[in-house]
Image (cartoon, rainbow over all chains, first blue to last red; front, side, top):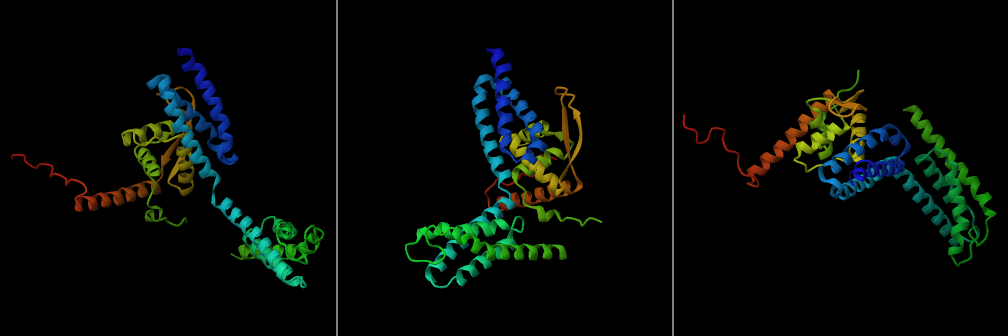
Length: 188
Length: 127
């Protein structure tokens, strides 16, 4: 079926490859996508002309491996890694605030202090959209609260209204951290 | 004035980056020509896919090892316009430094008898 391997298969494979290019970050795709697509068509033409349809399967395997490797590489840059670490830190601070609240059932200040310090550190680490750290820590305490069976002041099950109280130190800490980080960057 | 970059600070290179720089060391090439040249240089052992090739080129452009040339059709291929890449002066110095590093590794391997010793060019010749 020379028509199939010369026309239909390259078109189908080319369309599929163009679709898979959307897995790359948009800026990478817009800059290199057309050239990658051109190179893919060149390589496919070589594989089909040298080995016929038998060469198609190894070619697909190589291309799939190349795609998965390079997509992971382009997607996992340092900024993403720092973002993931900060998210994990925010969840850890929320868990710790819940723990502190559980062990200081008659005092709210230790819990508020953990939220303040935690959101400050996160605000310094990732100053953009600092409000999200306050929100994660504020939501985290009533969210993780039901995990504990002991009486607690802030983290008692269903005590979602306390979010408003936790947001005050959360936003304060996060924005002080954010402003500090920006001031240091401006001074440098 | 831009600060001079020490080629040693960019070593060691990955095999793909080193082979791409070698492919560009004698002439500027587009993506497909780089891929073919790398396959020829490595006796077909290194096949660069589009993702690996353009990922490397992106990082090499950022590091100043290569630069883009103009887009033009390749007279040996179809009439599609292709973007060409060429090696920079820094890229050439880094390639040389990496080649010397690899040469030193081969020398060490010969000294440890992991590789056969080189024969002198005129060994056995009757003068």
